[in-house]
Length: 380
Image (cartoon, rainbow, N blue to C red; front, side, top):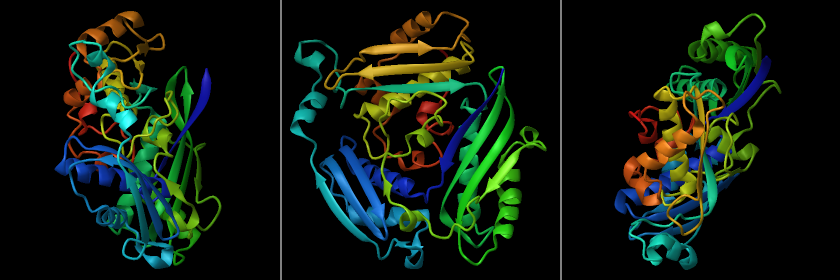
């Protein structure tokens, strides 16, 4: 059976990703000084303006405006002529503390209140989180999102190392893979939109992206004479970033995870400390799914963990190996329950999530990066 599947990625200069990076930069700044900081920080960007909001409870004193400007500078927005400049942008900050009603459930779980010996915070919210892995790539990620990330990362790299002198920070990529009997066969279509200065012709940009981006990071054996390339298909892309569109933290959840190849519980990651199971349990679910595939128990695996606010233990643990498992899914679920402490505290300690590691997760996917703790391989 033949089918096509498409995933997208965006560059760090995309308006939504600017906001994610600001939020994770602020989170890291607090964790550097206070590992127990409770952070739920969001950003909004529009034409040369940033609005920071959310709830932060911490003993640390952090200069949020300074951190925000530095994050924008690192992305590469340093010229007011393109509509966004770290030096001159207006920054408004409206931060409150975590709600006492939420904090009482996080500080002490329902199990502890009922006399259980489970020592853990309660989950910071209700919700369901998914983790996924498959054997399509070396990093055990779906091929469409893996290649999409490689393309957008390469766009940023050639801009920053000045291989070309006309690219600007905004951009996105989309990759369509043809599958045959559930295995990737070829790339059907690649779409790339790259923001640029008005000093370059569209033809030159297309030639450079083909030779310096696509041919450098896309496996050539997956391209053929029928592969379609759409590079800046609308024409010139000069107006971009926050000048072209507003941005918001947490709006690129499919880019952050599996490119829609797997289900998603709906919770965003960036700007949230690890007591928020939206983030920590999604990381743990990926860790488990990856190691089920890495240990040869299945070719593909999806894990769902669900939580109730203020309750430490997950409400449910669900496993689906899509009929590729060598043992029943129910037995895999039991292995998970026996091996892992899936309370918020158990996850935080197992993956060491109280360190300031989150800026490095923000762009080009939270999964598939070998240096992150939830990407490590273990023996089950």
